[in-house]
Structure formats: structure tokens, C-alpha cells
Length: 629
Image 1 (cartoon, one colour):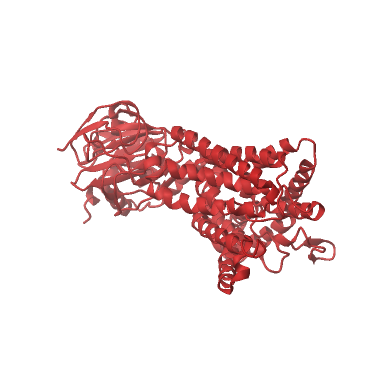
Image 2: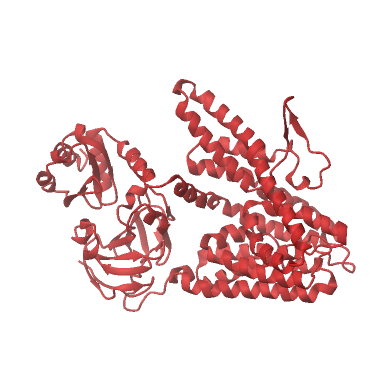
């Protein structure tokens, strides 16, 4: 017989039997019930159970505190009650009901690019390297590239493009897959939808600007242009979400007996049709408007103002993929005037975003995990490919992206104000100076210096205020007074007795303290092992090398969010070192759901905790004295 089967059977009886349970789940410390009639629960009998440490009702849930063995208790309860799965669906529904559709959409958007970052970094390095060997004229008096001088480099350049094209030209495939994966619909349909956006049957997106004739699908009564969306982000996002909601609609209305046939067929065909008739053209129309504005701005009496605006907004255009439309403007300027003063601003924007990443690398010089992303992203950015820097670093933190935009804006004003002109489209980074007419090199260097210094300085100054100590240093230096425990999070420290949840405030799980979070990064307080995680990612259990066990519970009642806004970076059984990232939580998501960000840290293995410091603290601060039991 399982360890808790007898008590689980008693608990089932004491809560009023199976017919009185509407839903049941568990978190890291307690069983959670939604009872049909709460008055039928025999509280005194439940609290007399050997495994029960107390009961209370909160947010419509009747909760029974079990402790660290709640998972095993829950499994035995499922065996005797036969209601597994009810609570998970109910909990998921509750979590969704607390968010507006717009809030949920924005939360989902934030996670779309996370699985794509490794590919973007790889592609960025490849394209940056290719830019140098096949686009920089450095031999025979500046008339030939390395590729033109040597067959080995020519072959390598061609081979690497196989990977670069797969990553960037076919990026819509990754985006539509990521959306369907995130939204819980059929992933293979997302992949196929992405392929239909970049199929070789279509006119390549890069060839649209110079095409004399666009092929069409002719249906007799109407025609649809056969345009591809290589490297286009916005049309792919719109198409991906269209597929998600079309599939959900058909799943809802289609009888199960024909669902396998009707749902995928109707969903995919309609999504592809909508993508090529409505969403794709919208993207191109927006791109056309942008091209017209650029052309007019470069030929106006207030070109300095246009430069400031264009320099500021170019990086956001990269996010949408619409920046490729500027190639047509550059080509027209070269044809009309023998050069382009638009392209230098694009190169300066890349340099500015790379400089923001450089500042983040300096700020996080002791954070090894951050450096693994920042350094290659910075290199590829300085070589002309910004996606790894933008998606991998700058957008993740927000302020580096804005600081880079400001630096780009100032640099663009300098460039356009002094008439800096390029011979043609070139390497969009520091090597881009080789594509500038020699008489403008000095002013382009001045503009580059402005992009580098302003973006770096702004990011560094803002980062000193916004980044937590562990964001900057990765693994905080442990205090000499507390060599075995560092504060795992940043915020306002308070006694455990002030926590609103009675399980913690009454010390039912053990002594400890709590932190009202001001930063969503949760780190390991010591070297040890992850002994417990939870599907909803709101709590984690750790065991120090000497056997001391700690529970970190992120927020109050955050189990009801069902993982929304949480990212678990470790798994049960992993070894961790003090300062390693355990969990990332979006505090705005937690607050918008009406949940507290007060987070208890409890020594579940026993012992005495004395709080040395209250109020605002940073990771690594000496806040407690712990005496083992």
C-alpha cells in the first residue's frame, strides 16, 4: 500500500466525498480543492490527520497544507478518488479568465522568439563573416573582395550561404512553428504555413522591388499575386496567429468523428489564403508607405529631422522585416545620383544596436551565461546583422534597444547633415566605411563615434540603475558572514510573519523570510541540488550540499497562473551553484492577474532563521543568520 493511501481515503471522506469535489489540484505545499458545498468539509477531522498541517479557505479554494510530500499524497489521493485531471483543466480556465485577450496575446508574443534565438545568433555570425569576405573591396586598390581573389574563400562563402539562407530567408517557417507551439495548436500545420510563405514557386521578396512582372494565381474571376515573404517577420506573425485561431474555431465546431479530416484541411487552406490575400499585402502596403516617406524625407528642406526620425525607427523596422524595403530606395538613389545617403544611416543603426550590446556585455562581464549570448550578438551586429543583438539581448531588457535607437538617431543626423554618401549598399556595420565615398570618411567616422559612444554610455548608465546585482555579476560574491547562503532575489525583505498566506506566516512549513520582488530573476542561494520543481513553475525546492533544504515560493497563489509569465531554467535533479538562474518571472503578468509578488523563502528542513536586515536589498546581501536544527 502506498504511504498516504489510508490518509488520502480519509481526506476524501472528510471533504464530503467525491461528489462534493468540483476540482482538485496541488501546489508545492498543499492540496487545493474547489468544493461544491464547502460546509460539508470536516475541518477538525482533516486537521487531525497526521499529514495535515492545517487548513484554510482562500480565493474560493479549500486548502489542506501537506508539506514537501504533497506530490506523493496527491498521487495517492488520485488513486482513491479517481478524479485526476479535473483540477488541471479548471485551474487553466481560471488563469485564462483573469487575463484579457490583449494581455494574453502580448504575453504570448514575448515568448515567440525565445526558441529562435540560437538560430538567429548562428545566422548572424555567418552573414557577418560573409559580409567581410564577399562585400568588402580590400584588394587590388579596392576593386576586389577576398572571394574574388581566392577560390577557397569563394567556395566557403557559397557553402555558408546554404545555412544563412535557411535561417534568415526561411525565418517565417520558424516563426509560424513557434506560434503554433506556444498556442498549443498543430505544429506541423504551422511549419507548412511558413513554407507556403517562402516557397520557390513565389516571387522572392528580395526581387519584388525590381520585378517588371509579378506572377499570379488566376482564378478567372480574380487573381492573387504570387509574392514570397522571405525574411519577413510581421506577415509571418499575422499568418501564424490567423492559423491558430482558425484551427481553434474548426476544432470547436467540428464533430470528433471527422475532426482529423476537416480541421487540418480547412485550417491550413484558409490560413494560406488569408496570408496571401490579406495579411501579406498589408505588410507590403506598410512597406510601400515607408519607402515613400523615406524618399520624400531625403529630398526635403528638413532632411536633418527626417534623419533623426529614420535613425530612431530603423531598428524597430528590423523587428517587422520591413527594413528590406529600403533596398529599393537605395537602388533608386544610386541610379539617380550615383550614390545613396540612406544606406549609411542603416549601417549606423546597426552599429548603435551593437554598441548597446557592448555596454550590456561590460555590465554583465562576470555573468557567463549572459556573455555567451551578448558577445556573438555584438560581433554579428558590428558586422551588419542586427537580429541576434535585437532579439537576443536588447529587446529582452528593453532599455538597451531604446538607447541604441537614440544613439542611431543622433548619428543619422550627423551623417545626413554632412551629406555622407555611399557608393552602393554595403556591409551594414563598422566595415561599412569601405562603401562610403572617401571624401566622406571623416564625417562617417564622426557619426560612427556618436553611435558607439551615445548608445554605449546611455545603456551603461541606465543599466547600472536597472540591472540587479546578479544580472550584472551572474553569481553574487557571498558574504563572509554568510558563506553558504546568498539572497536569491532582489526586492524588499520582510519577516515571514508578515506574509498574507497563513501557511507561511504561521511557520507551518518552517522558518524563513520573504521578499517583495522588484526583479523577476530568481537565483540559487547556495551550491546544491534541485530537489523539486512544479509544472506551474511558481516554486522550487533546493537541497544544499550539507542537507539543508529550502523552498522558494514565487508570489502568492501564483499556482493559479498555470505557468503564465514564468520560465523555469532548471529541472529536478540538476546541480546548481550559488547565483545560477533558477526561474524568470514576468512581474507585470503576476500583478495584472491580481497576485502578490511577495515571495517566501522557507527552510523546510528545520532550523532557526534570524533576519538581520529588512527593506530594500540586492542579491548577495547578508540578510539572515541560519542555525541548523
